[in-house]
Each structure stands twice: as C-alpha cells, then as structure tokens.
Image (tube, rainbow, N blue to C red; front, side, top):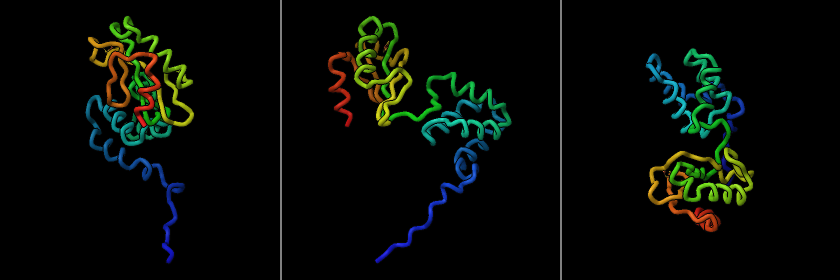
Length: 166
Ligand code: FES
C-alpha cells in the first residue's frame, strides 16, 4: 500500500509564511516602548538563532533601521546570529571562577573541542561561550551546559562531563 506524500512547500514559502509566528508577536508588541529586545529573545527562541534575513524582517515590521536591529542583536552576548550547537557550554570567567582555575577549564575545553570562544563544533554539537557569573561563586570554577551548572570543575575531567551529556 502506498501513502501519498504531499510536496513540501518550504522552498516556496513567502517571508510572511516563514516568519508568521514572529509576525504575530511583533503585532502584540507594536507601539510598546522597548519592544526590540523581547522580540529578539522570542525570535531566537523560535528560530534558534537570528539570521540577517530574520533581523531584516523584524526591522521592516518595526519600522526600524536594520543597522539598529543588527546592532542590538550583535551587542548582547545572549543573542546569536549563527547556529548554536546542541549543547551551549558557558565557562564562567567571573572573578571567583577566574581566580580558581576558570582559565584552565576554558583552555581545556578549547583544546578538547578544537574551537575558539563563540564557535560551534563542525558536527553542530557544542558551542563554546564565556560568561561573567552564573551565581555559584562559592564553589568555583564553574561552567554551565544548556541549563545545568557544573561546579568545581576539574579541567582534567572535562572529557567525563562531555561524555555524560550523550
Ligand atoms: S564568578 Fe563564577 S559563578 Fe560567580
């Protein structure tokens, strides 16, 4: 028995169709002061990252210059204009973590993953970032992976942490 498969319309989607969810959200925020940052937060949540096309779309909808929208999206480290990996690893380099070995943890992660800060591994699995504090200063050095904190991280045990993820 064969099943009829409907042809995929992705390639012929209009910008409005592609971004219909964010269109609705922009409408909800229209005319409200300070709406750009929450819209970017939501857009990143929906689409994973902020492509130039998506930023252009948001700029047009908000009647804002693209340069302003792009400027905000690239100023805040929370926003990303490139795809993130399945796991976003954030190494804390706040004072407490820095003084207690955060730099060594970062060096080990860079070495083990073969990427620099802000990059994603070619297999799309890990993105490496740094943060200023994750609120666990008393048990430093710390990293967070997605929404989980790993405290008192031993640089020599990074491999074990990465293995525990999958
Ligand atoms: S300085 Fe690293 S958790 Fe606060």
